[in-house]
Image (cartoon, rainbow, N blue to C red; front, side, top):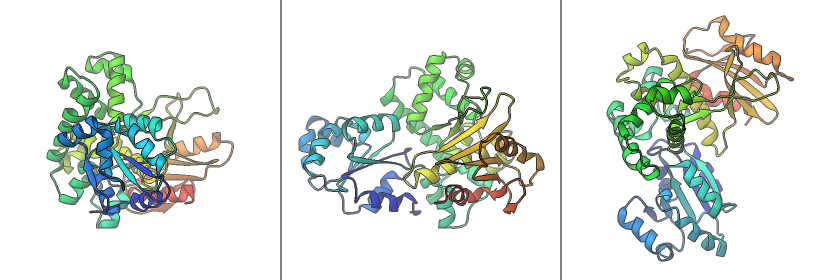
Length: 391
């Protein structure tokens, strides 16, 4: 098992809250992490039909079997169980008693806020970060990372990414989607997912996306919400300021795992990555989501945005840390070009105070100091985030 950055955070919060709730994509390592941090706790998998039926039919009797607490895996399968947990933890608020995991962020979070508000810490675990992989051994090439992605089973067991990601997608459609919404035409939905991958790193245009698939704007919105809830896609919000009224407000579309986006684009090996017209978009996806992992895996919420004006000027990533703002431009090329710095200079000139950092993350192998901005390697995103945030 590759050590996870979130482990000490999880352990620390177990001394403060009676319930810990961890959400994240399927196969991101939630169960493995919880069982390794809390090896003494009973483990209960609510995916098992007999266990799930017991929990639904007799929730009080089910929970009475674990008076000292337990790890309850895939809690979204029996969400009504949360209402019965509330009086138990209110009667004895001993910290670190129950650990809940879930693979659907919106449903789990809404139930939590209703039933366990103030009683639980909520954490998110995404697939492995570049930092975690690098700490465990030699870091693969950029093309390999873009092709294989970051799901722990693929990285740990050396699975064939095409086979594993194909199975992952099929499992998601068959198990998760049918629990959330009755989709009549699964082939049409799969086309929708693939077209989302074709727009990775681009502004979200639901009208265009729905039209290309052959569904209404409303259906496209509903399906996109499902992909968000299941930790398949991630929408990076635009940064709204009073700099100008002519700013783009639509979010940008990314995937929580860049390997899954590559699979959906039909990429089957590293050579395909190198020649693919969307390689730059995939590289941008890798960097943006790695910055997101830096936040989530330290128990923090996202503070990430992008900026774009109506003329097409854009800064790929803004990191908002209190009153400070870090500006990050992302380029897949291995050789720095002078015009890469122009968006950073343009936005810096519009701000009321100088940015905390101006950085360029690129596909090269050497960090550089430039007058316009510091140049960072793609494998040093965690160090860049630490520099911007000062912690």
